[in-house]
Amino acid sequence: MTSFFFILCSILIISCYAGILPTGTQNDHKSRVLDLPLSQQEHFADTNKDEKVEHNTEYDHEAFLGAEEAKKFDKLSVEESKKRLGTLFDRIDKDHNSTITKQELKDWIKSVQTRYITGDVERQWLQMNNDSNQEISWNEYDKVTYYALYDNVPEVKQVTDQYLRLQKKDRRRFLKADEDGNGSLNKREFIDFIHPEQSFRMKDLVITETIEDIDKNNDGFISLEEFITDMWDSNENNHTTEPDWVDVERKNFRNYRDLDHDGKMSRKEVELWLMPTDYDNIQAETEHLFHEADKNQDDQLTKEEILDKHDVFVGSQATDWGAELTVHNDL
Image 1 (cartoon, one colour):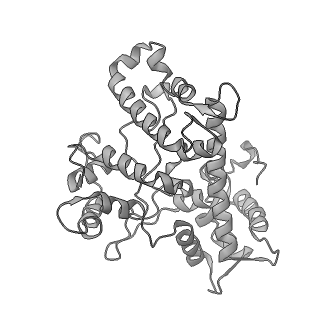
Image 2: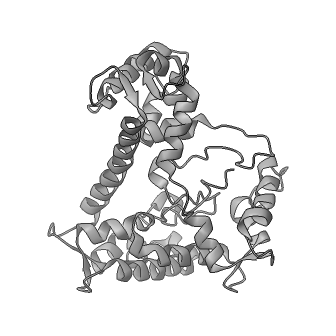
Image 3: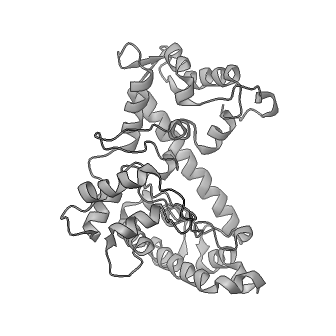
């Protein structure tokens, strides 16, 4: 579990009736990645150079393709995967000189990130905007997201308090996103509401939400125990053997999170954890992919070099499932 990438994942509260609570409220292991659109996967088991590093290529696949396309590539044969990766190479190579520079790769990863946000916002905008105007009111959002509170769904009686707590949190975020204070969100404000991790003016609220989510004793700080339990709750995992990465995260907390070594993270320390000022996730992923694939270290990637490392960029299955898949228009 990486310290760089274990940050805040925006808590999207779209109803998930099958799970009783809205999406994001299940007590599973939450990924707290502010740079959510790159990937919800963890990139490395640890970023401490003194510890063994376990690389997760699924992060690279999602960063390079986007989560949905990565799932499709996972079902392809090696041959089909390479074929489609070759087509992507031609799209990334903007100047058509048969090599990809770091800037071209950065631009591509950024476009994947932007495409995720745009698609997610558009999907939710259509779902929420019942009167098809240019703004979404709180009532519209509330009735779609928390319909179970109003439709007297029997199963919801067991979790009404959780619903109300989430509804209150959403209301606060809605008001913060409503920059002009007119009681409704236009498309730009709605983006800030759905993806506050992407908006500078929502930064303070992101920090507040993170602390509230992890701080179980409500003292305004995040203790080591709270920090670890948020990632790995032994009770929820049936007291199974604790993974090695949990102990690594304890060390990371003591060495890199709790800067004043008082046993807990203050608001400022949480901010530095969530929003490191000297870290660019797109640049880091670009450098990582070049490190993996740039065989002659000339700071340019040829199609041959990328195809040779296709498993890092897109992955694939050994069996030929590609025929069962419809080729996405974007690919």
